[in-house]
Image (cartoon, rainbow, N blue to C red):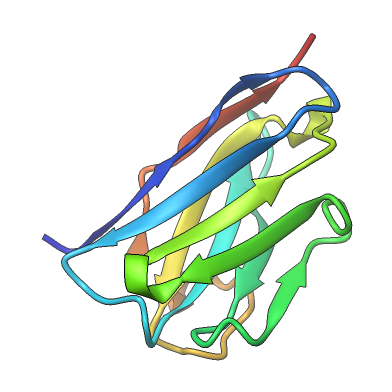
Length: 125
């Protein structure tokens, strides 16, 4: 079965950190660009960060720049999102998505071939 599985979400206080993981099952990530999206209640899904298939290119939404870091380990078929200095407005369900377009770093949903089920991140005191 071809799927992405996110993990690492949870409840954290403002200023805290979490590391999300996105693991591929049933396929290799070597040729896929990966994006992280998030969706808060009552809001549209937004792109958070992306990384090219080689890892040589990354991009971040302005709202997370300087606080979040995306990375990948193709040998482990896993992409990570390190989230530091978390704020209440970061509260959302976080999804990873993979596209065979290895250099794609955008937010057009139908460009992605695989989606994870999402992991909840809650930032609250």
